[in-house]
Length: 270
Image 1 (cartoon, rainbow, N blue to C red):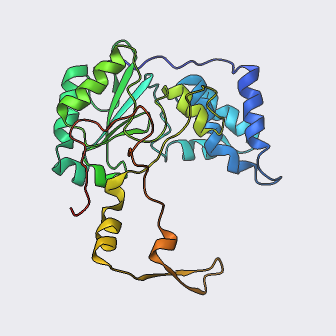
Image 2: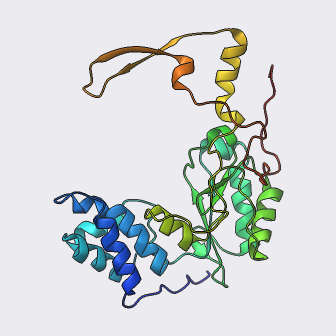
Image 3: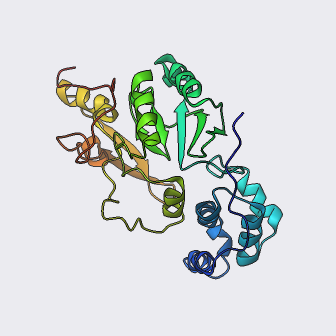
């Protein structure tokens, strides 16, 4: 079993403490505890996981107990209690992805890296985990690296992505933003912008997400979607085309990105 990288424990820098107070200042007086989720991401960006010191920092700055902070940190899977590498590789092995080969993808990467679930390579660079669902069944099988999607991967494509990471490269995701290290993406999740010039997100969905809409349009189907207002009362209905997103860009992804090998595609009339 590979050892987890060491957490960067110790006194937090003045910069991190200032960032924590900046997060708290986003919320109205009396609602400071709402800052806890982004603050935990900030701690994770600084230390590689949510450490005991990080829990104490959140508790002191917000004015709640360490037990309350720990209850939140242990509830959500995105908060790690052990340090992860620069690259968190998550492979979906839930039903849709498993049926499409997700378990085989995970097994191939586990064998290649010499680690199992929630373990990190000896050089501390890559942490592997199997995920119960990545909310992308329409692109199965999928994997993510630091929460950026690689859609329709087979064993070879997944291994190629990991090879690129081990060479120090940042292979472009199929969709979404450019690839960031775990520390970088944790800071973004804390609400701080990516300062890199290339840090611009691309489309979060592609053609497979709107196959049903395409079929409905070609068949001439029209309907109404009932909805309610904020008070919960009826607010009439809206035409289908008024509540669905615009179509994806013609190239299907942001510039420079291409679907992973085996990625599903659709064509008019499919």
